[in-house]
Length: 192
Image (cartoon, rainbow, N blue to C red; front, side):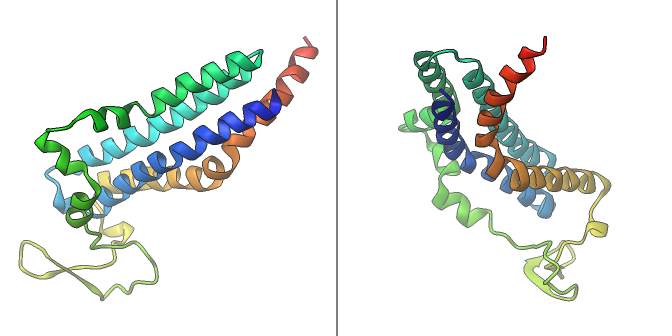
């Protein structure tokens, strides 16, 4: 059972990595390019919802897998959560003749959502991007924390916190938590 839990957790984890990464990228893009949106909080929130829903599905998956008592329930629960995790992709694929579908296709948004700014410390403060501001002057290439509005500072800080969680815990550790929880739960209940 322990090996089965790890395999199921790893398979779902690998299928959700792109969803989580995409949500983080949306949050970073909207925080670094607020002038491209009427209200940059909306695209940031969309990225956050994608990030949070993928984390929630994976956390639920680990909880359900650890509660399964036999291999049949383990597989059935995994399949059910895998369908929930991929539901948005099924809906997207079912849209055949929708004109708005073009807006979310990769070839379109890669041309529209071009990264014009960076937060990299390797970029000099005097470097300019190819984008002009309202006064006709080129915008700075590097976005510093101090140049952000208060809301942008808060959202960018939240993004950095979630990015640290993604890089340090989610990406490497989460599938192994199924093994850890499966091993520790019987020990915990033995003392009651």
